[in-house]
Image 1 (cartoon, rainbow, N blue to C red):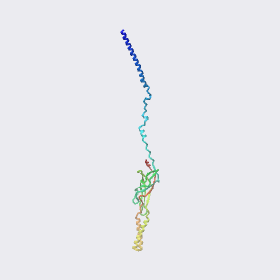
Image 2: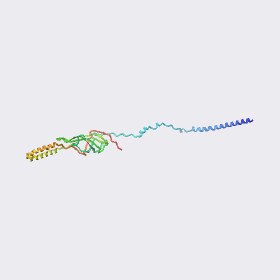
Image 3: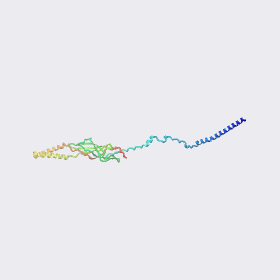
Image 4: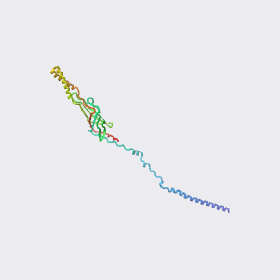
Length: 251
């Protein structure tokens, strides 16, 4: 009988343990379901956004640099001085056929601005250079002295602009009256000397001799030189058109 009692106790113990294990298994399944449910119910909006490749949104550095640097403005077009343009200058030294030689150079300044296309190429007072095209002292018997000059360049913004102008010529004054006076004086002096020496006939001979002496003086002496005084205002005209870069506009 004791044996049956032990078997009964063991059977009840085993049955109680099985029932407790079943209850614990049932209670753990809802918890696992509850733990899995929030993960399944997470909103799709929390998913990381797809990254767009950088090459599709940002420009290359070289293109960005080119866009940031402004383009340089184009230089203004050149301007042309037509043939016949007037250049008025003031000489700075005296030019004379007596001292100046053909090929010598001289300087002058503009008396008024040089304008082309509404723009001032050279202001008043700009330096001008010229050339003595011909210098002639004149003959001893005939022919008066003369001197011819022309312009060769104008200072435009610090650079010499080559020009070709017509010539300005200055001719010496005629000396016929002075020559006649010299001959007359010589004749008078000879007549006086002849009269003292030989009377009337001597006076005639002396007058002729004096006239010849006066004529010799005239023939042996050159006429007056052709002179262009310093500070003379002269006018020249361009023989050919001249094209020059337009001056930059100052801001």
